[in-house]
Structure formats: structure tokens, C-alpha cells
Image (cartoon, rainbow, N blue to C red):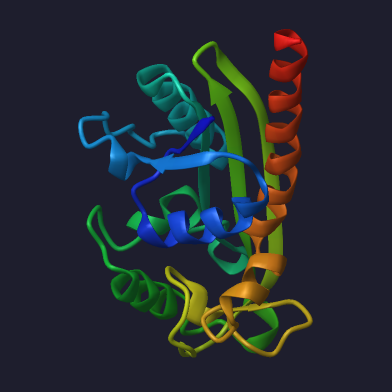
Length: 204
């Protein structure tokens, strides 16, 4: 069965495909559908954006579709960058520019006030509409300077609670077990398995 990841982000595709290896699915992404419309992420929450992407992409392709919206929520910045995490420094901002803006915004925040969380909301939909949403959250803190060369986004600045390495310093295998996306994917996989089981029951 073909399955769509509603993203063109190569880093996300790589992480999610690694996690979905156990499922008997032929995984596609929006890179395989160059004419698919760009869904405007104009929701005020991660869930709203994920649902919109999943529903619209499932309707366009006809495939069972998983979409996510994720970002960094910083307590000292009243939840920013939040749903604008990938566009924090501008619509076409690079990871470096976003990280630089975050560090500047937090330059006067002391070590006790740099708490933050990565949040990932995933939505599963088919051509008939939304099936389920799930959320993963990873608490930690923001460093005063980047560390590590792996990962993407704000990974070089984020240290998970009870760890002493940034997400950009962790091996992918470990990050995929403990990240916000991993937590959401674990729940999403259960939803996908339930959907596939329901299809088999109908066929039988």
C-alpha cells in the first residue's frame, strides 16, 4: 500500500522513513508529487496546521497521508517561535538565521529561565478526511551557543531534559527514540496499524 508523508523536507522524510521501516508500506513524499499544491500553514496551533496539510494532501493524492507540524516553544518568549519556528527569521529563513535570531532574543535570559520544549503534532487522513491526531513533546532547555553538526532546525541549541548533549550531537538512532517526533510517531504508527487492520477486515 502506498503511503504519503506530506512534506518536502528531506530531513523530516529521512527521520520518519527510518521510523516507519517496520510497516509494510511504500512510502512516498511530496517530492514524488511536484504538482501538489503548497498548503498554507496559517493555523494558530500545530494541530491545525497538521490537520490542514494531511486532509488537503490526502484529497489531492488519494493516499493515506501523514502530516506533521512541529516547532520550538520557548517559555521566556511566551511560546515563540511556536508555529512560526521554520519562519522565525523570515519566510525563507535558513536554520542558521533562525538560530541566530533565537539566541539574540534570549541573550538576556539567565540559565534558570531558558526552558523550552519541542512539540510535534501529527495528523493522519485518507481521501475521506481526518482519521486521528497525535502529539509528542520533548522538554529541555536552550543553550547560549550551538553545539553539534547533526540534525536540523534548532537541534544545535536544544538539550533534552536529563541529557547533556544537544539533538545535533546525538546519533540519529538515539534521537529517533527520544525526540518529540519519535513520541508522536509511536502514536501515529498505532493509528496507521489500526487503519490498515480495518481495511483488511473489510476485505475479508
